[in-house]
Amino acid sequence: MKAVRIHEHGGPEVLRYEDAPDPTLRANEVLIKVGACGLNHLDLFIRGGLPGLKLDMPHTLGSDAAGEIVEVGSVCEFAKVGERVLIAPGRTSRRGALAAAGQDNLSPDYGVFGYQHKGLNSEYIAVPESNAIPIPGELSYEEAASIPLVFLTAWHMLVGIAKMKMLEDVLIIGGSSGVGIAAIQIAKLFHCRVIATAGGEEKLAKAKQLGADHVIDHYKQDIRAEVRAFTKKRGVDIVFEHVGQATWKAATASLAHHGRLVTCGATTGGDVDLSVTHLFFRQLSLNGSFMGTLGELHEVLRFFERGLLKPVVDKVFPLAELRAAHEHLENKQQFGKVVVVP
Image (cartoon, rainbow, N blue to C red; front, side, top):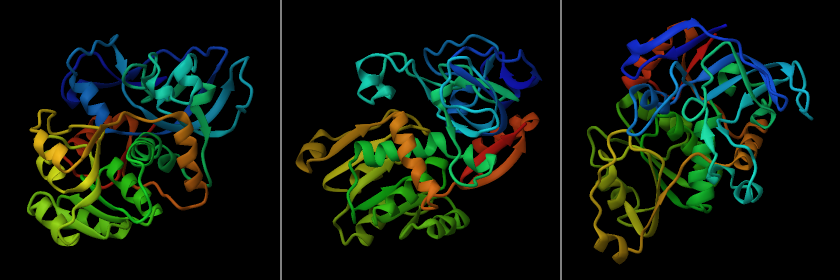
């Protein structure tokens, strides 16, 4: 089969479209003919290399995919050949107390496809039966591959960790990214007032169309000043953060008393200043988040079944042109998800 693999860390030029061994199917796994793969910023970080990260090379990237089951392992109970599925991006043995309590993303053996485990950017993949979830509704493979990682992450951040309530004010940093677009939609399910940041008039207009009540150009406008003006100096209840260094100061300064900030990334750097006085005087909560549980993914997918959430696909590339897709994502040209198809 064909796959895109890296043999070393580096820029987009290290991505190789090449022949790779066909997957070996285990008894508890299903074999899937891939219809589409979704890209994430995680792919860029893994490709470039992370401190302490050691991969068996060659390594296949990709945490999101959707396709058709073409073979079922001998002990699988529910999967059927011909079923259209999307892939839950986090993999674990489902053993131990944390997994039994529904906190599989905290299990010691939890890992993400394309990161701790071989990724999904190939023509065929073998994954545990529990990771293959029926595609809700009539979504295309391109749409389905745009859902799992970003909507699971955003749901876990806002609902699981920040405990978002109805009618709260929510600031979403980077509202044009895949996880930002998911966060805007999820916050609107709770009838929250959403303030979203993005770069450029086109992206701001699309964020408004998606449901944002107020938008801020984070390249040209003062985020804190705009938030204070929109909320009549009160600030927001929740800040949804994943940018890090470039927006951290404005994000924390935008919180109301008892506000909660939740973050899942640091695309501009992880070293930030923190005023402990500001933290305790305003009684703020700062929370980190990583992925989410399998149960939460099933929960959020119900909203796609009823048409209350929708994937946003920015651009589709052939799998053979994954390098161009990485460059498109790296240049921040997208609004929504970048997808590749074999």
